[in-house]
Length: 364
Image: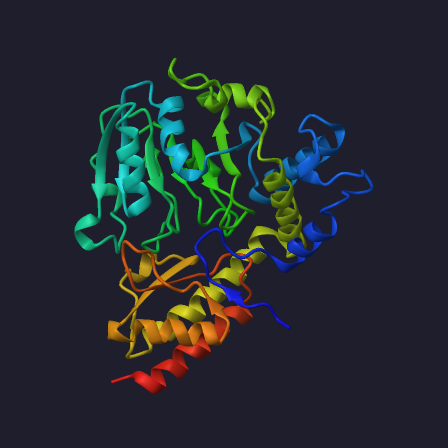
């Protein structure tokens, strides 16, 4: 029987092929007599897993040689502290607040530096992106932070801002947790990118950091050694015991992505999925998406029933049709369909079919 379609925002659905392989290797990885979670992170077996995962990810994301790939812990939320500890020098960092996650980033950074809000769309309900030309950047920010895809609010940068064109030579920091590996990335505009793995890369527990070489020497003296990017780099992400099993499963996801044709092929699939779902919402009389069309997320699609008294009936009907985890985030309500890389087009079509069926039954 086909598995249910899981629209969770994270931890999110995984490719079925990856889960099947991980299950098959649970007790005995490649004849080693050990499961991966039983291995020493310094042993040759795990060393092979790590090296392949790092190489596959660098190839997939087309990460230039002058960037380091770090496998860390703590999720994107911890990076809200770890980034300013490493990059701020205790000075001023600029934040463009476009949703719940960038808002949290600015709030956390204030513990370690001055956090200047260069722009905010809170007054619009976080339904748009501010024109970079309108940003009120500091004179010399240590870095400029954006969340390039807001998981809760469904807003996405389809083109990264070019800080140089704004007369700013600070590094751009992006939280790409919920759309990493869903589309190509212009690394020439990025100084550091970070993201929790539990949406597009693998299971919870692993955090990816991609940091430019020249930014490794700026950590505050109070930065814990395990969170110092220079220390983590020098120890190949093994200064402390890393999240080994999460790294292994993520490595399987990287190989799955390569087998799908790589990032360009995945992006084409994601465009088709998002178009199908947004078209169904936009042509309905019962559902509405409030995000401006030019910055709608391909990964996270929040929507509302015009009659919210129908919410419980909608969720109940969805579960009956094996369409899971469609309830919106508690801070914004409504519904949310997260359609990450592992969500097949067939899953989105099943959701669209249900949207239309439910509307036929309940539309005014």
